[in-house]
Image (cartoon, rainbow, N blue to C red; front, side):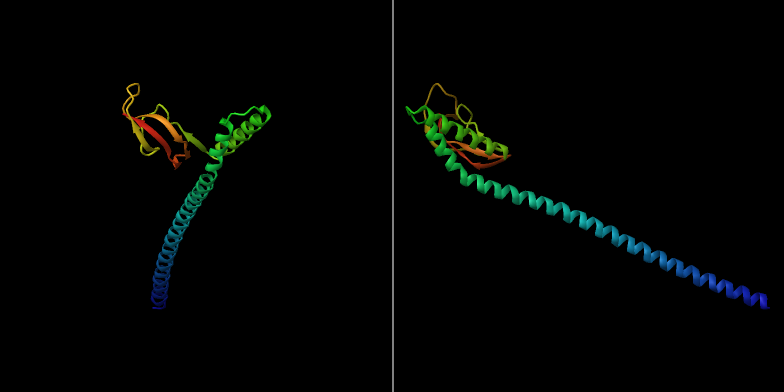
Length: 163
C-alpha cells in the first residue's frame, strides 16, 4: 500500500512537473516570438530612418545647389563676355571650371537641350518657332541651362522649341 501511495505521489509530481514544463515552454515560445517581432520592428525602424536621412540630405543639397545656380549663370556670362584682358578671361574660366567641378562632385549635371527633343520633365518651353531645318519638337535654343541632381531635376532648362 505504501508503494501505491509512493507511486501515486510520484505520478502526481510528474504531472505537476509536466504541466509546469509545458507552461514554461509556452512562456519561452511567447517571449521568443515577441523578441523576434521587436527585432523585426527595430530593423524596419533603422531602414526607415536611413531612408529618411538620405531623402533629407538630398532635399537640403538640392535646395543649396538651386540657390547657387544663379551664381553659376553669372560666371558663365562673365566667361562668355568679350574682353581684351587675357589674364582676367583666364581667371574667370578657371573659377568657372572649379565651380562646375565642385557641383559635379555632388552629382549635379547640366541637362543637354539644344538639338534634343522637347521633354516637359526636363525642359520649360518659353517660345515656339517654325524652322524647316529642325525636326518636330526639337529644341532650337536654350535661354537658361537646366540641372539635375542625380535623377531629380532641380531646375528645368528654359528653351525655344521648333515646329
